Image 1 (spheres, each protein chain N blue to C red):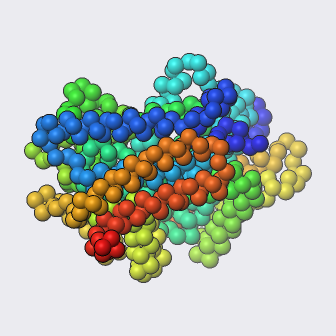
Image 2: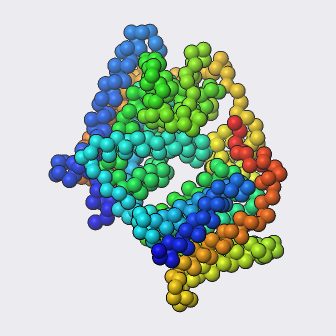
Image 3: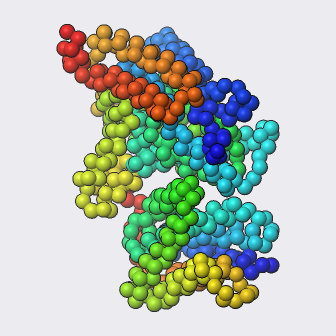
Length: 199
Length: 380
């Protein structure tokens, strides 16, 4: 089995765990869901079991333009409505998806996806370093290295491809982010999670 | 030639383009049928002694429908272009268009995503601004079905991206959309009661009356287009109550007969609200919170609706003005039919110019009804 399928499976496992983890804020879980969709499609594609390359490309584009910014919002603004409420996390995700489709797909500006992912990771890194969350910062640094390895394609090891470094860096980074205690209020004050609209 | 240009001439059905028949908008046939059905409903209602039509409301509904047809022949290009682009780039499967199951599945899936378009249109303020025009009538009859939004085209396409990812061809998507749209026309009536077992899975006049009601039990209910099963699945279904008939309209009444204002008044309200709000959080909430949200009453429940206090919007309309308005609307329908038949041959600027002139003309009718004294003085 190609290494890309294996490392994508690793990323899928971590991202799915995040997606289903009710202890985490909605934005993080939605980002996990997007990453897991892209990774599962990657496994299907690279293993040759059921290749859907166009869906993998689309999900990867969504991961870059939606999931990375959602992670950044969850880390930089842990109390924001877009971090903690389903409604606003979804709205944020849809807005970013629209931006992605319009600019990256229709406008053919692939650069936006790369820039959004990079800026999101840098924003997370700076925030976590400022707050002294060193384990989280280390995880995000691994994400950054994975992104750089994927973009620059340096000859790191013959057995692994640039995409593998991205998958491994992402999996490690997501795991570290999910283990942080950045969102403790989530467990203590569930009423804050409710939709603010009057019902 | 781009994917969209290859597949789409505004207002046409792709298969007609492909086989060389002059492109024809399906609405060229649908509009006369709608109008005949409206006349028929008026007649039946009159025989039954029901007052379900008011002239100003009906003319406004038809005018709003005309405006939406003009605007959407231009705005709809966005939806179709994006869909065609997505199918071409990301469509994963090939569908046999000779197989009836393809079409059935497309309609069911389209209706599923329509449920979410519609629900979002009610529950997110900036999207409600596009949809509110459809609910602005305080009557409920077949003409209400013609009150369609002129501004919804900018967001609706997003919800149908999954259909494009599945690879449903553009013509299948467009026909599914047309079927969904046409089905919804007939459910805007008070003349049909409950329909037995059909109520379980289909959108019917009864459950759509609830959707248009402003009573407490009607708010944010029954979003389905063809199938009501989505409402049952996602907890938004409500049956019509015999003891509490729906009162139609919106909690913030429209209070105008102007078809253009009907389409933009809520956008204006949102922008004013956001301008007055303090802090970026509240400003964003003005756009993305529920329509009932205000900075002052963020945690307050929607006020209880009291049907006895409700009065329908009405303005005096002298006979001459009524005749003039009806004549203008009939003329506008004729011009719309002309536009729909010639617009494939018109350039973009000609289409925009034609549409803008018509929209302005219909805007004047609405304005005149709100200012009868000014019009009367000018006439004298």
